[in-house]
Length: 369
Image 1 (cartoon, helix red, strand yellow):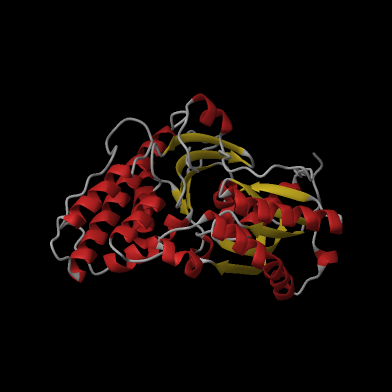
Image 2: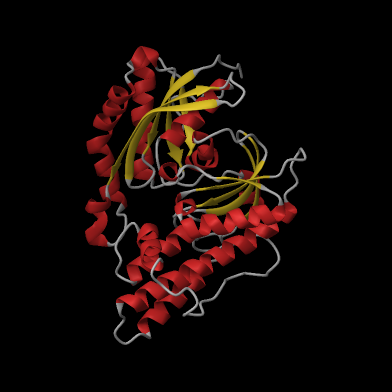
């Protein structure tokens, strides 16, 4: 691998779920703080298209990406004030995600790379999240990473680009999925995370005694399926739920999730062995936008003498800026991919741990398998 001179300007494309996104990011790796400029970021949501179905429909998502991605890429170029000769490379999410959508974004990036003679970076969506705090400032390796989103809930030791060691993962549902399912149970609409948080602001978090799965148990794994079921049973037991009942249930659920995340992260902090004396903690993913969870994690870091970093709120959920940044980081080290790079529905950050100690039994289907 041959390092490439800074600064680097990279187009990023993200289509792993129900956001069609493109962004142009400039990385100044030669500067001490590794400064990052987001020159443009366009995100087209598909919320209205999926709303009638109560969740994301993969076929609808993929078709929407096909319909809108070309225009989104063009808008990203226009808003950046740049043209193709000023772009150094193109990055796209190559997995994990809904495979139809992933293929749309990756094939578009391949076409651009071939037509413009640009290097291609096939980016792991999870690594995009792992690097997303750098969109707001320098966060050097190594650090302890809590990646918590709609489809993923993991604790990892982030040692370098492409070098991650899994400390814990969900054995069933992810925290973000539990937020979405809770919102669906309570009829709050989607996206579920912001809806639950908004209602929780007016609720009594101590009214309902919901379970804290795996809290206090050895290890750093997560489980949220039982909590989700408890929300359903609690809601069904309310004869005619009032707005206050719903607010209280949202607040109680949110507190339970925060308690579990803090407990599991505390155990990971005890196990984290950085290569230097600095102890950094990073939280990333859509659930990192939840203010209560973020505050609780900041308190945990202060107690355990870890520094705390999180992406700016606008970069917590799926976006193409984090994919462009991951691509630029890889390009700066000469880590480029061939045009036959594969789209992957599953792609663990720590493939060795996922293979040796899988969190799910063979035969399970779905993105978390």
